[in-house]
Picture 1: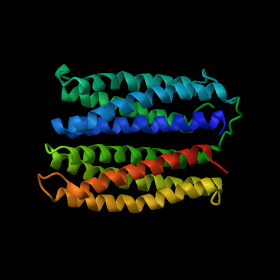
Picture 2 (picture 1 turned 180 degrees about the horizontal axis):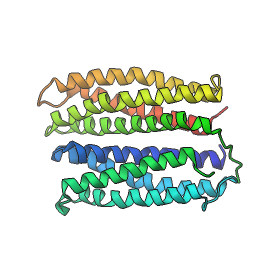
Picture 3 (picture 1 turned 30 degrees about the vertical axis):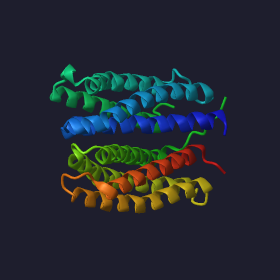
Picture 4 (picture 1 turned 180 degrees about the vertical axis):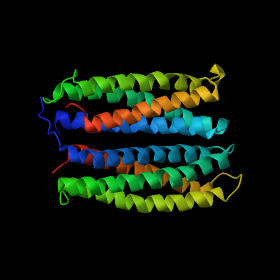
Length: 134
Length: 149
């Protein structure tokens, strides 16, 4: 396998992990689960969201540098970085609340933050597939 | 440096549904594995966790499978790569995986009928099936991205 193959495989696998973390957040935030649900889903949600998020960004930048047709400063790549920042800006308070429930994030605010993270992640996928301007 | 192939724009929509469906499919399977795994390990909240796993299979995995599979048909017909070995890996994991998903859904439903008890053997089987499916889909992701052969 070439470096490009490895970067693309791990980049896509990281994106799958990111979405798995987001879906677990969704079950916790929208499902209104109790303590047992929180204990079961919070650790994988936080791990997948954080590891997937960091790896998808780092490996994506690696791809942008490795591939001749793309540059890290291309509009669709800069857009992706902004969407990544929005998603993680919204996801950070959610992960902190899951780690320490005494932080007391209001359910309405948690739902809003989850919605922002979900929409930003969906737009990231749209941007990655359609590559506007590439 | 790698020279990337830019695909035709008409491929993007089916590819979007294929990848998006696959991501939701794997995400729902992770919820199934985590919830049922916790239900099997612990007594408290077992019924709630078992129900979450069953709903994730029924309302998450199965609809996502349909979206992923429909997108796959769309992109394969546009690319004209029906005979490629990496497409065979995708079809194999998708079609074989559907059978395992249906078996897991039936087992999860049976586990919910046990009431407040831990989900028992049916729950353990669901965890094993979800783990096997996640491994198979990891292989499929590798095949779809690296396109061996």
